[in-house]
Image (tube, rainbow, N blue to C red; front, side):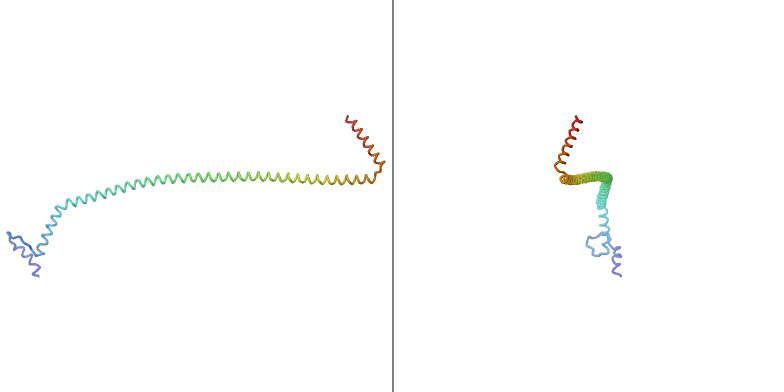
Length: 184
């Protein structure tokens, strides 16, 4: 233990006028050197350190201001985007409502048009059926008339002889003559 405490004890034996030399005793020279270095660092480094801290503080404050400005602009843009979204949603709802009413109107127009077309087709069908029935009735009448005429001619030809035939013609000529006088 004596070696460790020797340097502290020898501090009291230093001469006041002395020599300048290299002291190899680490324990004796280290606290002095450290205090001198710290003193110099504090004295000269105080301004540099405060300048560095001030610069850092200014950069942090500038970054905070820029962030606040960016945040403010982002909020403004968000509000604008929200208002545009609301406007677009309202327009989309309007288009949807108009589209539905347009579709409904077109549906009713199509239904009415189809109904009219069906009614016209039904009328045309009924007219065609009536026309065909009338034509069939006329053909049947004509065939019946021709058969009756052929039957009457056949009966007349078989029953009539020349004398009866001449008398019938004379009677008919007489009736035509009387009709002519009445009309005149």
